[in-house]
Structure formats: structure tokens, C-alpha cells
Image 1 (tube, one colour):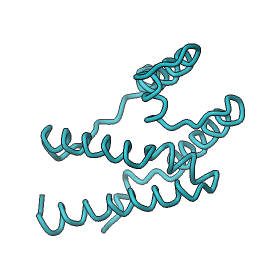
Image 2 (cartoon, helix red, strand yellow):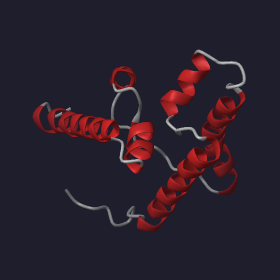
Image 3 (cartoon, helix red, strand yellow):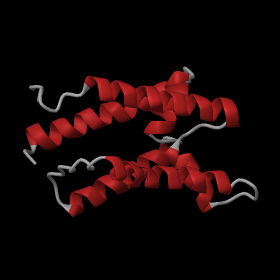
Length: 144
């Protein structure tokens, strides 16, 4: 493995991590809610009266943020080196895993770990391990 020093951005990465941490902490402290994306979206699929507006605002913020960013700077070009079929399968598997794991990477990995939740520690270890194993098998054993 080698580091692409031209694309190495420790300060912007650190800033992004700090901003995510602050947003999650503020969301929990001010609203008493976990900023897990699957839970926020799941609440829109089975809405509870009085619980919809903040969820819509949250999702609009996620979708709208890149559009606001594009006003000030050029959006980075994604480099996806696989086809739509594999992306669809991967997305479906992530969705299934999110349901079985009772949360997603943002809920368990960001919010749960910061609260030292044992369930989130196990869930994060499982999805990180599964990700490592998947990349190893697909890239090194199957050469896909």
C-alpha cells in the first residue's frame, strides 16, 4: 500500500471529523436524539406525528450540503471503478446489514462509539471486519 501524497489531506480530514463530532454532540445534547442516518430515514418511512419536520430538515441538509459547497468550490470528481450492478448489490447488502445491525455506520460508528455503547462497539467491529474481508476477497483473491 502506498500513500498518494498529492491527495493526502490531513487537515481537511481532521476538520471534517471535528465538525461531524460537534454536530453529533450538539444533536444529542440539544435534541436528545442519535444522528444515525438509517434511524432518521426510517422515521420518515413510518412517521410519527410531530416527528417529521426535523427528519425532513436533516435529510435536506444532507442532500443540500454538496449543492451549497458547489457555490464556493468545485465538487470533487468521484472515481468509482465498478459497474452499476455491483453498486446496486453493495447498496442492498448495506441496507440489509443496517436492518440486522439495528443501525448504520453513523449511528453505531460515530454516535455509539462516542457513548461507549457495547452494542455499537460490537456492531462497528463487525461491519469494519466485514468490509476488510470483502475488499480482501474481491481485490486480492478474486481480482475484481
